[in-house]
Length: 349
Figure (cartoon, rainbow, N blue to C red):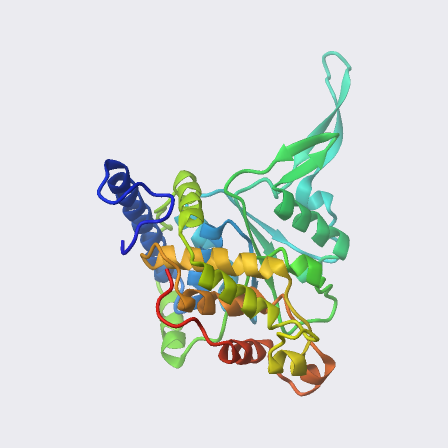
């Protein structure tokens, strides 16, 4: 480790040594998770890193990519490598909120004839939930899941039922099939920490995909990290220090996305209808802290903020009609904004 976090004991103390030893062990587990995923998923290193950032930051992620890129396999493999309970919900136009959260049923005791209402828990009561093609379900059903994500609980029969911890929702959507879909409103998209893009593989990667998926079957996924380790890493992420200069830099990146402001970046004013809210800044800081920890550092750099910024911002800004008409991709606008805001000089820490 390069530095100890603000919440760690003083340098050289038994407490500091213990924390460093614990962190080394936990990060070794994360590295093993990454290797395990790499044994099943060819390429997509950036997407894998962003999923691990989401996990350590305690957020949820929206995955977008054309069919056949392995989104479902990636999520299943991640859940297996983390030794967490996993459920999958296929979102369809007829899916109801109760199909996600659970329903109340009237049961009769055959011996006594007594009737009572019992709540049957839905698939949301798990640790890793794959919400497949979330934009195919109607808004009321989407809202039921997003409320559970936000609150970490489900209300039923006058009671509040807590969801398992850790609780991680990974939702997928197809960017090219829009017929019969219900796009998530911007306010609901804001509840996802990151929006992860999966791209087509390179030619070499595509050959490897063909080789690995058409041969003999592979062994089961080996768990490398457990729930207790994940929760401890989330605590350590919060302890990673960040300088006032970088807090100001993150706030400026977010504020530059808002059209009509004195701080608006030129490309935001040209291509965006509206920009990101304060939650984007929170996501950027937590994402940068998680990334720093993943990379073996206990301090945040400007590059950490710039690395997570596209995944933080791409679902929190809205292109205007001119950008849509001219086919301007949102990631290009975000990159132009990043290029227009110089990072702090040196290594703040």
